[in-house]
Length: 261
Image (cartoon, rainbow, N blue to C red; front, side):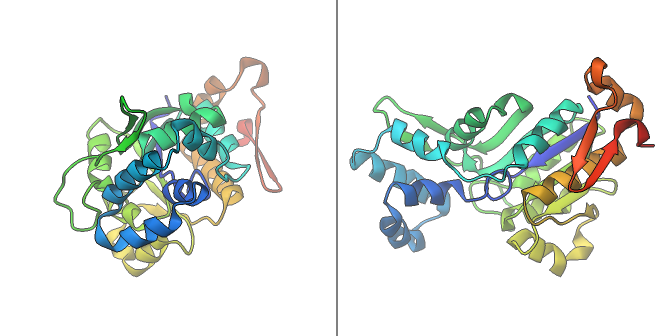
């Protein structure tokens, strides 16, 4: 392993939409969702929406089919596969749920790229209904009541000396960005809530900040960062023995592994 942990948020980072909103909208429950939204926390609301969809006769297969057509930028999957091939430890930290995330990652053929998924439990019960539960209790006032991503980052940091690259978009990604240390990288999606929070509180973030707009820039910046962090020897050990001159393509730039000093 390269000693680098790459942590991905899921909604609007790996995929281009919020998976909760996508499922609710595609299954025709938007009005009820908007009606209930002011009355309960998001995680509780999604649990309630799954109950309502079950009562309306929507099946787990209906939900899977919706998840299989979720929008994703065409360069995101290649970026994830490249990071995995270079020996990075890839993990998901997301306020979505396990059922949605695993269904999508398996459909994209990249579930095995991730060593760990940290998210709200989501499972099918004996009645065939999708149940969604909170991830954990915590006392952080920056995060929603069901999940503090900062505490997850602290737990990963406690595993040993590892450098981190964190990619995210939402307000819930600000707390973990404040846990990153010098030598780490924070990749906020430009003009999204976490980017705005970092811009307003730059003194709280010790990591080097590299913003991105879309999947093409995500791939470009992520590959450049990994190239700067991983030694040539490590790269040569990671790529196929028959292809040690493998190139990382990034927009119009081609970076030869053997030229990365």
